[in-house]
Image (cartoon, rainbow, N blue to C red; front, side):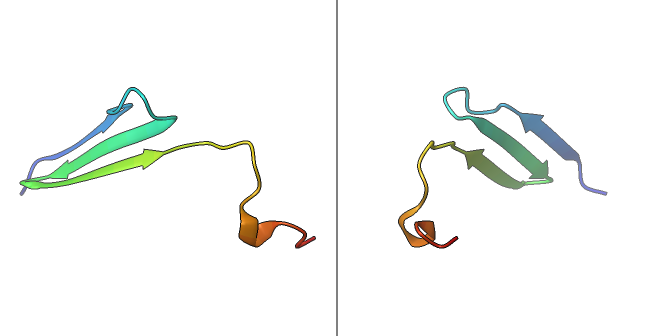
Length: 45
């Protein structure tokens, strides 16, 4: 079986981030937060 690991807060300058590893495969996920409504959602209810 391949080694599995997860490290949260991997990128310190993001609101949220995680590095997920399975064997030699790595996935970096980041998130940011904005206080505004996206243009395609404005006046939609």
